[in-house]
Length: 357
Image 1 (cartoon, rainbow, N blue to C red):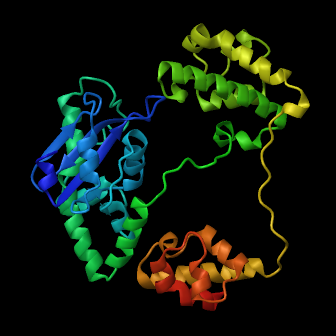
Image 2: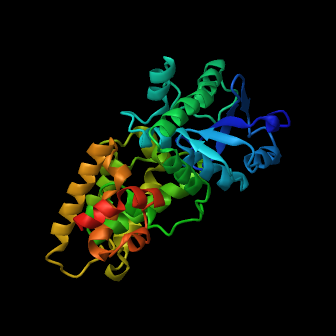
């Protein structure tokens, strides 16, 4: 790190354990200059503060592809914050590249083929193979070169100020825990269940979380969402009935069969007043003209996107258009106060959107 602190630009990527482990942690850190790459094993190092100091140095520009996740994990694990970031994924979005992924853009600009073999590998295992290390190193080896190409294109299209505003927003994300709905309700298909079925799903989900945490395994490795949903919709009468369900293998029954049945029985035994219910969606007063305003805004947004060679969501996302249609901002200043709009979006597209409104 003493050597790297002398650099003015560094590329960074991380490999985490989120796919395999219950406890999400960074298991490998890749750092590159323009001509060398280092791999850091954070599981073997007690004090990572030298990396934190480098991230906080405004004289070093950190090049990251899709920085949001990496920045959140660095904050979560060590309270590190980067203050000067260039996000290559945001850049390709603003340039309206057909594909946003790193692999596609490295192939386009450098002819490099990234091997996707280890995308879902368990990076918490040790030792890591030479092939895995080589795969990880490729994620940052060409990143600074890609940044140079994208920066030049952004400047040519006069969009560099847009990118800088987005980068600045990235480093100021509060990273505070967001008040979210109950985890079991976020399972795909859960909100279609009836209250009593939800009671069973909640018990099964709580049981699975406790086992996954104890084993430090990803929850889906304990028992799949589909199995839990099926058991909630039509609770099995006994262990034999549960064992015959799709996705329930012998190993699940041998290890956890009685515990799963107990969770199902707890859910079924809950009194009606304790059944969970899906929160009702926010309702708005009826407005005959709202849909018409929203349609006009979407049409205008789409016209701007075609004219400026931008994705619809980059011009203005649908949920923000819906807020504009409801809140009826009277001028550009009021439009700028609507959550989800960047200053550059208001400056570039605000007047046209207001006319459509």
